[in-house]
Length: 115
Length: 116
Image 1 (tube, rainbow over the protein chains, first blue to last red):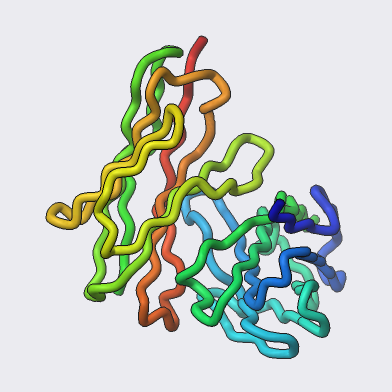
Image 2: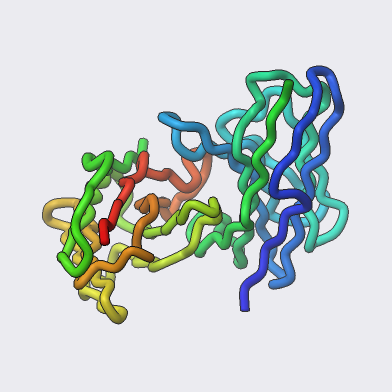
C-alpha cells in the first residue's frame, strides 16, 4: 500500500521561528513535492525534487527552502516563519522520470498556524 | 498554459441521488494526463483516477464513473447512489507531457455535500 507520512498533523509556531516539516514515503519514489493549500487559492506548488539532493522551485518558493538528503525523505523549511505562511501543507510523491505525469500520492497534511 | 476549471463550487444532494462533478481543461499539448482526487474533511488528498489523453474509454469503478470527452475538453466524474461518506472536496487536475514549469495544475475543487 502507498504510504506518505508527515511529521505533524497540527503545528503552532511563533513569527520568526525556523520551522521544519518532514515528509517520508516508503514507495521508493523518485519524485517528491511540497504544496500549500489555502481557501480560494487552491493547491500551489512550493518545491519539488526528482532525485536525492536535487530540487526545483515551484510556483511560490519565496520564504521556503527544502532538503532531500535521502530518497525517502523530503523536508520543507521555513527559515523565518511569518503569519502569511499559516496554511495547510501537503507533501506528495510519485515514481518515474516524468515528475508530474505519474500519479502523485499525498500525505495527510500539516496544518501550520504561525502566531 | 494549462488550466483546469471546476465551475461548481459547491453541490448539495440528498443521499442516494446521482451527482456529476464537472471538469473542463485547457492545454496545447496532444499528450496530457488527467486526474481526480478526493479530499475528505481529514485533509488528505486521496487519488481516484488517472487518465492519459489517448485513452478516451469511460471508466467505472463501483459507484464511481468518469466520462472523458476530448471534443469538449471535459473529464466529468459521476457518483451513482451517493452516500454520506462521499461528502468531500473533489479536485480535477491536469499535467502535460512536456511537464516543465506548469507541473500539475489543479482546479479549485468542488465541495460535495451529501445530506442523509
